[in-house]
Every structure is written in structure tokens, then in C-alpha cells.
Image (cartoon, rainbow, N blue to C red):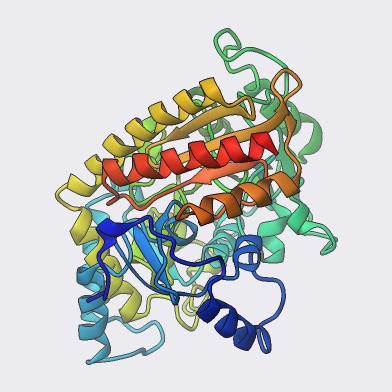
Length: 450
């Protein structure tokens, strides 16, 4: 049990960071590398516990979590069901490679109930990037081809293979050369249309750019198209269903696998259990992770048995990884799926997300710094600009000042760029969510005045 009342949040009692945070941060910094996330470094606060949509630092400040701890705490912080499942499983067996356990069988059965018939065979891993890397091997193994198409502003992880899929991210600079055989296509970013068209009349013309990339840059050896149904880290960009349907057609025509990276968008984040449900497009391969185990490391591939069993990928040992499919991850995953099974948490996420989206649109009417409001479910974003007509992004300094201004008002966000991502836990209640939006309103007023 936590030692605080989450209903008291937001509550900031000290300067940030507080004295205890400063002391512990200095001790930690003696040994920790200096490349942690910008938000963690800018704020310097030290967190000690959490409950629901609230986290507490060591100075007893309470923060409404508008990040879900990097979109991991979908079912809230320290949910008793997950905590108890981990404790119970750990008391029996901590780990034994990828051997079958009762916990894994139960997890697979629970997960299968959330997915269509084409996605009933699983291979587990520990991190999102690891699952992406495995999916690349899987696609090459199944198809016998080697090219992969991905999209501008895509985010797939920090391993070299995953970075190869990402077009233009500053975080990938300095690590090249990257993997060959990757085709980068413009994305369906309706706010910054690659064709300068209007969404109401564009007929999703950007699909022609996908075809052009394939026709002009490919050797016709396409193994996979990998895409996030809603681009997350790249700016919370929901793709039109017609765009995703076109990718389905391309894969059907070429024999490539359509891979949906739902490591961030899955487990109720965009409203339904899986974001692809809203589009009506079913992928050949689904990647999941982040919120699936309530904070315990987990990721996985879901596909057809014929895909996972084909070629070198299907040989004994080819899919193994030290901590993949560990019984603790499986126990936590089953607990999360149990929490979501009756649909109430998912419905709450949709309801609160709709209320927050409406409130954010109202903010845009008052704050010229807001260029665009977008999102789905509780994956929301504001794109911040210095000039609405020119759509000029704000500078990193403005993003930093907004993040710290929000923290002083008791709201934590993870974004540190021109797109402010807002991703509270799905269990947040509407009153707390709108209190966080009110804090954002106040923080934006402060930033604009400066």
C-alpha cells in the first residue's frame, strides 16, 4: 500500500527539485551516465512511489502523471493485481530461460482472447526494440527477401536495426552507417502534409508517395512494411484508415508482411484494446509491449504459426532470448489483461480521452502557441509553434520551460520537443485529468507571456 492519498494531487510543497531529491540525485549522478531523458535531467526529482495516475517524489510532492511513465503504466502505478501476481510468481520461480511454465500458458491464452485468428501465435522478448529486431529477422526468414519499408517520423527503438527504420530523428545521428535495404516513405501527417494538401479533400493522396518509393527505390525484394497505426514518439500522428488499407494492399500484392508496431499504441492506449481495430486493417505481424505488463519489462510478436515457424527463424533456438517469455513477465501480463477484460478501464480511457481532447481544443482557441491538437483515446498531443500560419516549431528551450512549468504545477509529462505528448494512465478519472489540463492552461499562459 502507498503512504499517500492520490486524491490530493496535484500538490507541490517544495521548490523543484526539493532538498531530498537534490541529495539523492547527486548520489545517483556519481555513478549514472549523463544521457538519461531530458525531462529527468531538467527536473532532477527523485520518485519513490505511485498509485493510479499519481506519483510521489521523496519530498512528498504529488504529481498527476500525464506520461504513464513513458506509456507503460496504462493500468496505473502499482496496481494491486500486478503487484500480487509478481509476488506470488516470484515466490515459486524467478526465472528459467524460455522453458514453458503455467504462467506462460495462462498469459498466452489470455492474450489470444484479445486478438483475431490471424494473430494467435506468439514469441516473447523483453523490450520493444528487441521485438522490432526480431520482426525484421522474421520477415526476411518468411519471405526470403530483404527490403523493409518504414516511414518518416517513425519511432521503433534505439538498437541499430530499429534506428535504421527511423527517418530523420536527431537521436539516430552519429551512429551510421545503418542497415541497408530500408526504404523510407513520407508518412500521412495531415498537419504537415508532404503534398501540402488539405485533409478534407486530399483523398489520402500520400498513398501515391508510398507506391513511388516502392517503384523507384526498391529492387522488388520487399520483405515487410512496418508502421505504427498512430505514430507515437514521432508526434502522435494518427494515420487515416485508408492509408493503412493501402499498405495492406501493397503487402498483399508484393508478398511482404505488414507489421504493425503497437508497442506504444496497444493495450487500450488509443481507445480499443489494439489500435488496428479502429482501422479495420489486420496486420500479418503485431508487435506489443510497454503497457502490457503494468511496468514489468515485456514485448512480443504475434502472427500466424506458418509465419513464425518458417525458415531459419523457426528453427529450435532461433527465437530464444535470455529473459524472453520469463514467468514473471507472463504473470504480470495476465494480471493486466485480467484488469482490462471487462472493458471498464478501456471505456474509461475512451471517455476521459474524449473529454481531454475537447478541453485541449478549447485551449487552442486561447493559446496561439498551439498549432494543432490531435490524438486518439488517451494518446493525445499538442503541436507547439511560434507562428500558426508558418507552422514554425517552438525551440527546445520553450519545450523545456513548459515541461518545468507543468511540473511546478504538479503535472509530469515526458515530451521534450515541439510536440507535447499527453498520455495519462487509462485509470485516471475525468476530474483529475481536467485538473491537469487546467494546469497546462496556466503553464501555457506563463510561457506565452515570457
